[in-house]
Image 1 (cartoon, rainbow, N blue to C red):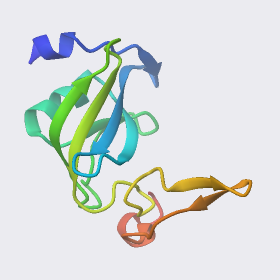
Image 2 (cartoon, rainbow, N blue to C red):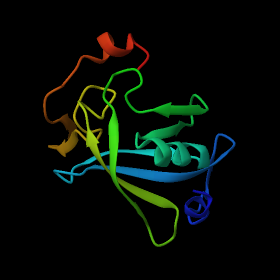
Image 3 (cartoon, rainbow, N blue to C red):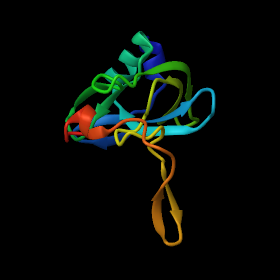
Image 4 (cartoon, rainbow, N blue to C red):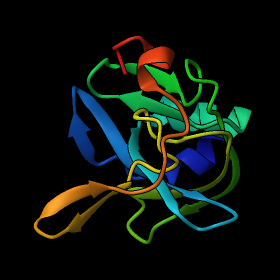
Length: 133
């Protein structure tokens, strides 16, 4: 495991942490679902468990995608970019990836000079997170 982690360049520095960028893509459709940060511990946990684990810069702690919503992400493939500072995860997404209830966090499209939501909500964030989404 240590040898795998050594190849990753945790060069983004936020919230007192050394982080790498995690781009998450649906392994079937290739749709980009979300982008988040990972510290060394989050990456190690992801590789150990096969469930996506991230580092929250606002809460300053690890979080497993789906721990509150049940919308887990199971790792199918991991790729590392040429600089070693960004990881691409191809995952099986259970439910919605976005905390706003959409399948992808990239559900806003620029149209007619404004951002328009595209797609339907798969869940009500107020019911799932109770206002703390």
